[in-house]
Image (cartoon, rainbow over all chains, first blue to last red; front, side, top):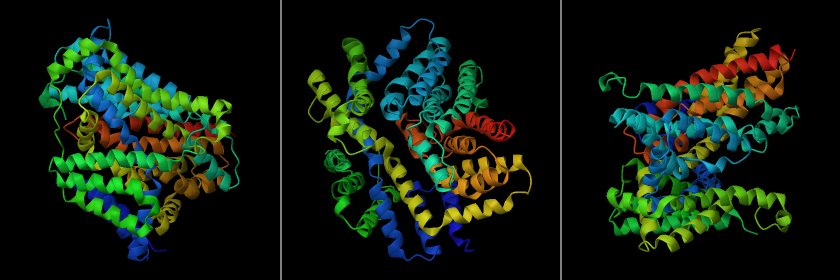
Length: 227
Length: 316
């Protein structure tokens, strides 16, 4: 067997480790892999072009940016903070745990477009989490502030990934079904999606615990001791 | 019938406006990059595969030479924003909610009424098309209510877009990488290697290699969808299902979730990990990944245990 095409994978890893521009890394790896597999240059460029063109729908979602930007111009982030500041007993731990549950449950019933980074995390969740953290810990050190913002984005991801597969009509479940069917194992989407539930519960417990741990540790660890 | 082509023209208009504003701002690299993306949206369906490929290489060359820069269009100050937020109140949330509500409620309404029989939207494309409709409605509502300068939404959008920069097209580029890998047979080679290194007779170790392969290959490809067919063909089906007689539903469903743990740990999953770091203006590009590793590793262990217990101990 010709193992040379695996060099493309090595290029991806090395390129990222050396902090080259990821677009360069990806295209470099694609060209190298194709050429090492014995394809000619034109065929590789054609494959790249066709797949890029077929997947344009992925980049359509950026058209939301003018809406978010315009609302931010008129104080959307400040409003999100104000809501939390006026809420009694709100802590960052509680807030992000509730958001985690909300994201998992809505994704599990097929509403995965309700959250997301440009439309929910940046304008709403992250400012709310920061305001809640400041409520219980006072003005945050820059290091802690960065962690709270990053944890808000992380919570959106975890909630989405480990909620969406409970919904049976979703791309990943259909992909699993298709692969198994092609090998002669017909499965129903529902059979697959119930087995996403144990992991979803584990994800809620583990990530919920980590959110609380971050809330407890804010302001406790001196800045020098951080990563 | 409304198809994705309509949406591509709409996106093309947005990116063309951003390219023109970049031109006015004398940010040549940005203008060229977003201009090429607009061209891809407008003309991609009519260009040859090779021409599309050259367009991709040109965009990569612009980003790779660092010609894509952040921009700083004129906007309101923090104090002004605080005043606006007090004055406008919670109504500010309304336009923001129009988009997800149009997409979600619209999809449900479309699919559970006779409307779907009219064939108004291309099949299975309704959610993203309705997302586009929601964006337009939200823009009209916000413009009519707030009455900002005419170019404000475009300029505010450009600020956000330029803070995301090249990462905006990385997910699309990774799909292209996956296509080339498939053409070169990388999946089969990995499957062969993974199959060779598994010790005979140990169900548990085979589960571990399967779940590890899912996570690692996902990290490299930035996407569990690329890893799943490979690992299922190499280990999941021939060994776990056929040789060791495991439950295929558990192996498939939880194997995919083991891959999702890999997604949490890789910069290649740009739209989930790198884009939010840019949007939140984090100092560390990998800041989101750092917060996720502590969840991903124990959760991966849970997935190994769930496959082992659910597919083998409970099943046999």
